[in-house]
Length: 365
Image (tube, rainbow, N blue to C red):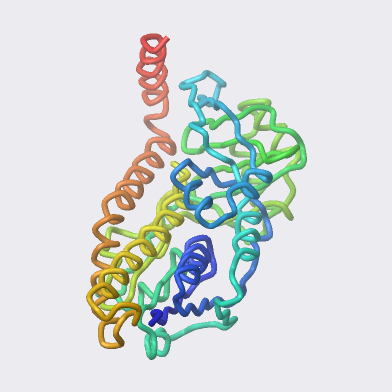
């Protein structure tokens, strides 16, 4: 007997879990209000462990064709001084829009898709062996089912992300006094850029871009060139919200991706952990289903009364495997954000980084 599984959220983790669970023969219903491809294709850095998940999905080669693969980038101070040279580590820089589109295309016909707004998760649990909350940083599943209804916490930071059709002048991240600005390539000809600065949102992307230009403009010619090409219609503006440490399993409900451990974007690992979460959950279910079948009659599948036990054991195993790495990335990302965004200690930070990392580079050479 296949498990009856409902998934709320058709982002990276929800789509990945749907594809893998359906491939294992489970009855999957994927629910989302929009099933929308992001309008602005800002880039994600996908590292080799995440690429292995894409390979299991059968989409890695397609993802490669729409990705950039720079070999190295630089971390710079606001005056252009190189603080560190950072190898890319075989990461693929992939448009979030294109990744979501590829995953939607890979969704098998056996997955039931339901386009609707959900305001109460209790009906979703009825008649399902497992409910998966893959509904993002402001997860309704988390806020409805976990003690004290844990909400996401704002860090008082505004993020602007965008793309331009021009080739990137460099691959870099620049740390100023209370702000940062990153430049990376898109596949083919194009630039992905991102910036963080103290909270400032007007409701108008044109005015937000103007404020960004006033804040970071004039420091480096490369940043000015990118911002000159930036356009409101190719720009996203949002805050940074994170979720404190929680156990991602409760009864027959589990959280994946940002719903479980939304993190600051400073280490670029949100999509990577989302992909790995989905694969780890599916692997845990596969192991426990196999164990239950071996205990039952040969060829008869999972006994109906064993589904609850299978789900319970699977979720415990999933949590044991994913909590430490996910929370480690969350804490490290927040620490990196504080270092990158410091204002009063920016000069001290730059001196320490240039001295320490310069010595490390000399020894490595």
